[in-house]
Length: 387
Ligand SMILES: *Cc1c(COP(=O)(O)O)cnc(C)c1O
Image 1: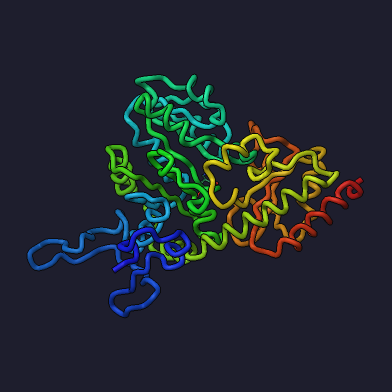
Image 2 (image 1 turned 180 degrees about the vertical axis):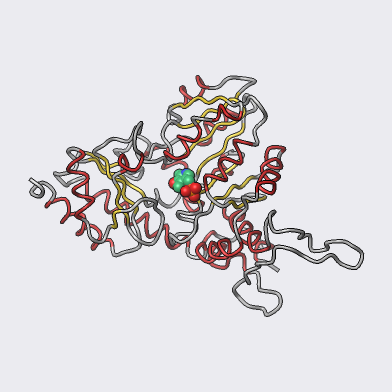
């Protein structure tokens, strides 16, 4: 029996116990890793347990999907080999000639890929989804099939009102998919706000240990689109592998405690950095000065996440600060145990809309006093060096 049969368990309990299922052959508290890719027929020719061939998925993948579904208050979840594969499966499964509306500020890799949806016969309009008038203006009744939002979004942490966008989209029968990688299900549950689908780069907070690449989708209601996404995943073989799924379950057991600590530290660091003379702006949805703060207060519970950005005098200064930190590792990605700092414009390359004086910070699980001190050392030395 798993613990979902007892209703109203908190997120902390859900993740800590990974639904509480015991490994049936030993009563182990930790699931086995199911590596088999082919399964014997029974004497009557049936595949009673339902498994046929490993390209579709595996029991280890199901176990991880069940945890994600419970966290997102979803009926079903699906895991993919990456966040990009999850997002691409949705786009490629839309009806032909679909029009898509998407946040103009979002994870750059996905934004870049979305620019070429024409190859699937679709068209796309990028809009400032934090502005509901802009969302409404971008919709094409009868043509728009999907609205794709990310909130708070990379790298300015722009906040989109999920419930309000759902209302606009549903009025013309368009679905809404929310990339909820940044807030995680601990701080925001888009499906409860009306979204049709949630997507995660599970590479980031869900796994949390910077050792797998994975993507997830979850939905409240199985739809034709959902079934086409599942079929495509099986046809192309883009389901997550069993070992990665097992690691993901292990990682998710500490999701609640990790992201709450990271959000608490991010809030402290953001507030203190406001007073540093070297800093032109601190971008964090948890600061009252942030343009999305009021909406974030309404749709985020318990914290504003572990990501923030700072803007410095110019690009040279920003890069110098990133080079001078010791505890904050100068690396891309985010959501792991270790704190990271990154000059986003450099990795996004040509055509980036990221300000060149911006550094993105992913707050890890180190002592917040150590993290702040390390930043201060890097900031105060940043103008004297390299002259
Ligand atoms: C990393 C990321 C993605 C892409 O996911 P991968 O797992 O790297 O394929 C999508 N959206 C957001 C917000 C991300 O941070």
